[in-house]
Length: 101
Image (cartoon, rainbow, N blue to C red; front, side, top):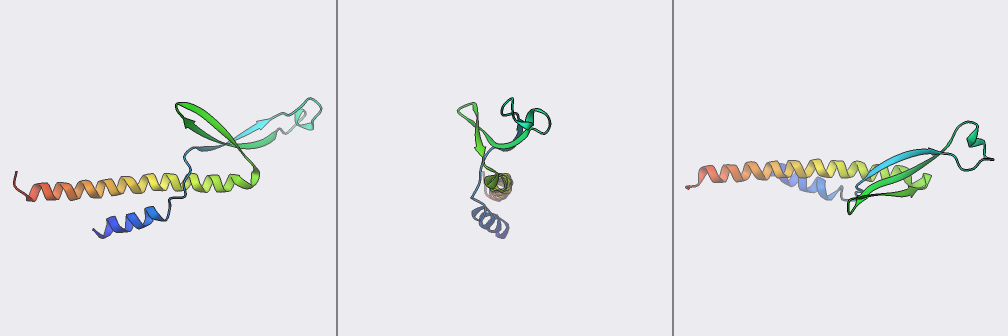
């Protein structure tokens, strides 16, 4: 049971999550801008699904790293939940094998 308690604690420490992907776009803004002759402007968006549709939220430069960190936490939480489920499965399996039918 120690493993599951450790996993629950780890889960509680990582609940500041964000589901989606941080994507980078390169774009041109107008015909008189230097971006038409060389490097395009870089901008970041958070891409998520809502009710089956893709939604993009513009991320200002100061928010990009925070969004990435929160997205990494989501992946970690997903993994922790899978481990907790596996522990619960094993526990249930042991109890069912030792008890009568």
